[in-house]
Image (tube, rainbow, N blue to C red):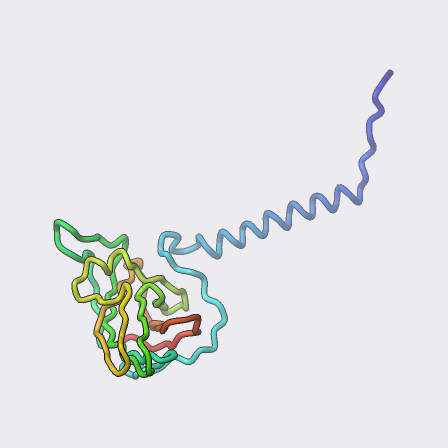
Length: 182
């Protein structure tokens, strides 16, 4: 007895090869999108966004919370020498005033805020670094109606990044309000 060799089907072969090529191209696109440029930056790719960006120093509102960016500063380390955090790249500290314009207590979470660079990439806030700042008030701050707090939102960004704007979010699942950095 002998085993008969199965003849290949040219259509099936073409489809398999095409599928493999599409999968490899897709993986390449994903790798370029998420790993290209600053692969250690913590940035997410920019998506088409039509939210207007307010001028620096403007009070912006998201839900019941109103925000004013007071100033920014750069540091390589936050906290004390004994209990602090060193930046992977550079810390950008964004000093903000948050006002509750509503009629009930509202929460401000520093970790929900995003930093946008000149190319539109978004960077997440670093709650881990913020806890080392006495004046941060931002990991989780509850604000009563009519009150305001000043705090600092910390971002760990690559040294080569040019910060452009901050996207500020109140509680809930809002789209946020963008304001240029001073």
